Amino acid sequence: MRHLISSGSPYEPRVGISRAVRAGSIIAVSGTAPLGPDGKTNGKDDPTAQGRRCLEIIKEALERAGASLEQVIRTRTPLTQIADWQAVAAVRGEFSAQFARLIRSCRSYDSSIPTGSSSLTPTRLSTTKSDR
Image (cartoon, one colour):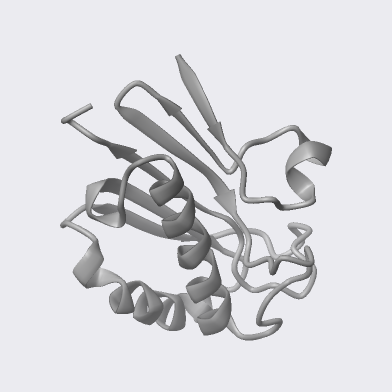
């Protein structure tokens, strides 16, 4: 059985996605952009603020799915500007006490990806919860 988790983003119904989906013991979190409740980019031109907002959204989605950051097994962080990797990695470090050692990747993508003035494009996570 699948359980769909919404963040309330105005883009979810338009694009046809859920913030996260739980299927048994697996939770997959959709690509996460640094949007505020109003649907606008949070921290324009500030990769640190954008990275923090993405992780806050992801943390909330995991909690609503009955999991936590400690159960995350993989993250992927595509950037439109590779020069931002250290700022984004530092934010990841702020959350490091909540993450178990995991698989992580950070890649640069074509800056023509439509992200507005956002430097950070979506982050994806998957988690498993063995006790469910």
